[in-house]
Length: 166
Image 1 (cartoon, rainbow, N blue to C red):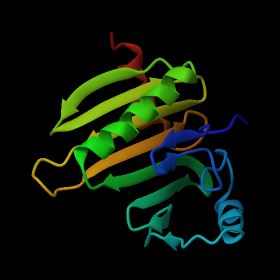
Image 2 (image 1 turned 180 degrees about the vertical axis):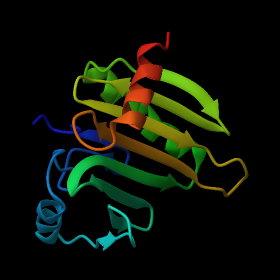
Image 3 (image 1 turned 90 degrees about the vertical axis):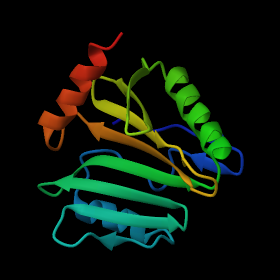
């Protein structure tokens, strides 16, 4: 299966295909085994099919499962300033363009910028919430969802919105 993300450099920070990103279709025990070979903290969310990997105070990676199969991964990072967050957004959008993904902008929802792209086997989504007040951090969430595994209704609804977006 194709890699989820390729290396994307950010000033002092990276969103990347690295040890935290695992191909879709893996079982929960496969993911746990992989994470245990790394020095990552990980927590199973109570009564859900989610593993949470708090990488640092500013970064969390979540793994989502359905029927014990990995179907989505989300990398969420906070930035102290909107300027730093914008650099991350530009890097993510440049990556999406380099990977020949057709990036489409969706409506801003409640102050969040929303971008996405659709491939044959996945939907990639970038959501950005800029801090509105001085000192309020900005949040950048980069996620990928499998179109082959997991709950397809929400994934296909997003894919449909993106496919019909000009």
